[in-house]
Length: 177
Image (cartoon, rainbow, N blue to C red; front, top):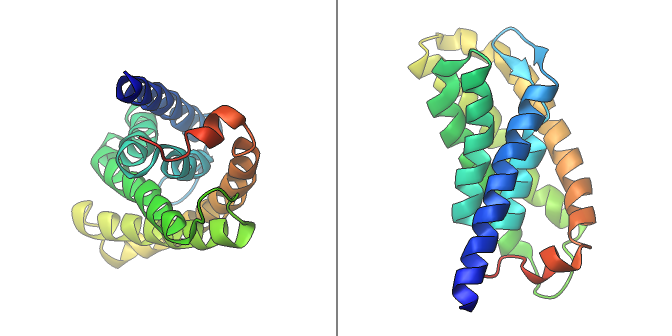
């Protein structure tokens, strides 16, 4: 029975994070040369931190991919799903490597987990645009905007995770199951 409750809780949280990822990506979109800058990365990182690697990857990729689809950027959907899913996965795995059981993750530990994930995001979109979308080196024009979005994602996700970790129901389920 306990496994079923844990799975149900993860599914409910994953669905919530998909919706939050969509809203965070769609609510504020600042157009750039190659797309738009948004706040979705903070939710993507939180997906990895709260849900773990598998559910974090899926939920972290689905919300922003859905936002791309419904915003008229359908050609980004496969890339966004994989890249954002990997952002959640990378942040999760690095945090797990540094996490000491029973202790609240420190700010340096959270930053160490989020920065490489966001650098991967910027490089992932560069490769996707350069190869799949056939933009060549012109895809480099999007790197500064992607890094700016990544910086916002790092700052906001660290602050939000520190607040969420203080919620007993979430702290107790932190990576369990």
